Length: 480
Image (cartoon, rainbow, N blue to C red; front, side, top):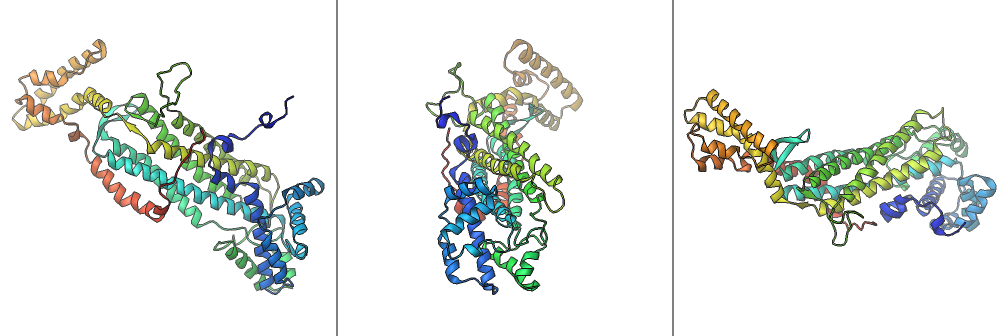
């Protein structure tokens, strides 16, 4: 068999879809550097609380936080079959003076679980940057097209008019809800902290010779050094796996919003009213050269389904944990959490690209309005004719009969809708052609849609994205 880099499976999430920034957060370098930062924070806290640790030892640990000897750690793990101890030993190989105080009093979950929380927190912050940029794109689009009438759809059947901009606010509103959930979760992320083997802090109580206050202070110190307000008040060996479910549920919510938005875009592209960006040399189909498939929206929909389904994994893990802990969570977490984040990162990046270049076909939108508006306008024409002395019941019957004729012409003969012409030709309405046509202006049928867009932007969107305005305007470079 041929043996090269092309004969081994590669993860498309890192090779094709997600950004380098998101991939880095779940990289070995980030993970094990964070382990070492946690070991430094632990040693510093113990030193400050009177444990026999020297400043020289701390300096040695700090100097090697990012200088990770991966190969040595890999060799050691093959022998000891324990990932944390292999890195304790590898770190000690670089820190001869400090090797005896690395991981002092801690269990594996100290570095493993606290690092998981830190990775998820940083990944959520990156997701927020991209979500805010996407919402801002929709805001600009909504304002630009707030006054452009468009045919509304219920059950994918023609309904009352809306505007192109108002429809986009529906997408933005879902994403705004996601942003609110995201903000809450980021603000309430907690470390596992310094809790010991089964969460009782027994090893640290022994280390501090029964001084409960010093044990509590060590937990507070480590959290502060790592940039967190607090840790969970209680834990088993691990932090509650409920947190993983809460975090991935937010990603699932974003995926649901994105799938809904891109489904709408795909439907509108099929109607030739709206189109995602299509590059000059892009090929829509290998067989049908004329096609302009909505492949980016389809990719978002595809990855969104994956994220939504992935949210089941942490739910099952949380539900099936035993007592203080079992290890049937580990392999699952290594897959589910990073990959859900990378897929979420990808759909947001693609979404930013799509919403930054949406193409609106005003004439096609107007054409579809003109096909359906005559039926919708009859109520307005009827009311105006009644104001001029007409009998509502008699006029209603006239409109019903004329509507049937026009509908037959459209459905059976494939011709245009001539209902307004039939009404103009009728003598029943006591209105001239200009008066009837003035009623037919589509803007008369959009209700408060333009005003709703402005109100929504001013009262909801702007306040939500204002705190993150310095993050707006990121460059997105799609892999494929």
